[in-house]
Amino acid sequence: MEIVLVGVNHRTAPIEVRERVAFTAEQARRAATELRSRGILEESLVLSTCNRSELYGVPPEAAQDSAASLSDFMISFHAVRPEEVNGSIYRFLDRDAVRHLFRVAAGLDSMMIGEAEILGQVREAYRAAHEWGATGPVLNRMFQGALEVGKRVRAETELGTRPVSVASAGVKLAERIFGKLGARTALVLGAGEMSDQVVSQLRDRGISRLLLANRSAEKAQNLAACFGGEVVPWDSVAAALAGPDIVVSSVAAENVLTQSMVEKAMAARGNRALFLIDLGVPRNVDPRTADLYNVYLYNVDDLTQIVQQNRKAREDQIPRAESIIDEHVAKFLAWQAGVESVALLEALRHKLRRERADFLREHGAALEQFAPGERQRVEALFDELLERVVLDRAERLRADRHLRRKIQNLEALRDLFGLPREKP
Image (cartoon, rainbow, N blue to C red; front, side, top):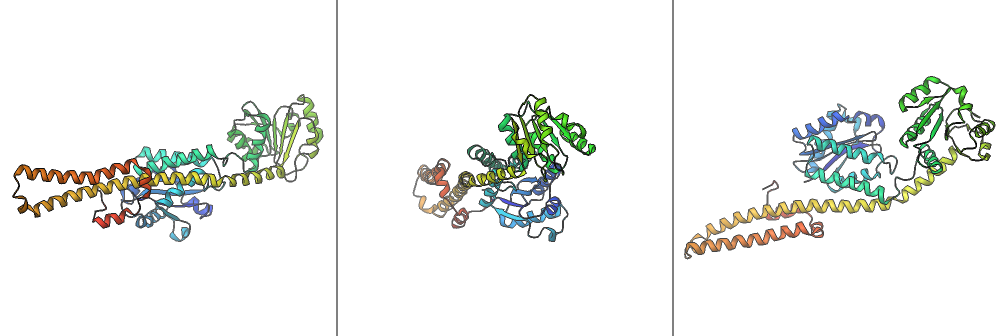
């Protein structure tokens, strides 16, 4: 029941390397199948995201030996040269592998601490591997535990509740002003990377209507096609300000929105609340528009300050998240020890019964003085004693989680009693 993990992530490898060893859904299925058919693993699961590619498994032999085989498999599967990934591949065994997965599911191993997407990616990787029949009792228990950890961390801490990107912070502020965005309209000026992030956030938050404007109409149309928005001609932006609840500007120009433009728009909209997010450098929106009634203006510096505060607040939640992880790692290890120790006791039971039979044969002459019925009674008493010694302990292990946690180094017990490492 040993566990092995090998992988690369954003901490150990640049994006050029991560791209080379990433798995598509079909590749993940093929890899999981090959790992088992080649006898490298008995259970297997591939977790591949933009920031990590990891192979989890239960090997037929010692995990220490299989880690090297698993690393070689990842290299050969993607046809990369070993020197390209030297120093990038990490290996974790048993407890460390379990802890790593639980930290991944909790969002503590992400590029952005507390990100919510990773839990869904772990869930999908497990669902797929389970459907393929690639997982077994160990990985099933391990990944179910990871999903429980992720849910608890999100429910019991604020690790993922505070936005830590400028785009998400701006949209979160919009929700504070308007509540849910399902009935709201947003106008995004610009079609660069920052605009793309904002549009993605708005769509994720359920914005009802999305208007897009850019000096290059083609770029605006491309962004609209990706996110289901409507294109507003650049020369119609001033008139368009009368409609939306949220206006986001990320354009490489000054005074895209002047105080006069916003003032006229507020009059046309009956002074209905207007939330302006200025992500431009230099600033796109005249700072004096913040003085207008019912206009809320935030620029890059404002949002960056919020992001820094949120990042610190997330970091303050890490100890609580780690304590949840510790709790679940202990639960998994107790389960693992219980299964292994019960199996060990079963092996011991078989061995003692064989030794009982050998003992009775060796002392057959001494037993001749007993009648057949008495000899059978002696043998039955031997069996009852063995059952009491072994099975009673097995029941205690099944029932007492704290006792299972105390059991360590089962291999030493196997060696002490001369028990085989394979299942009896």
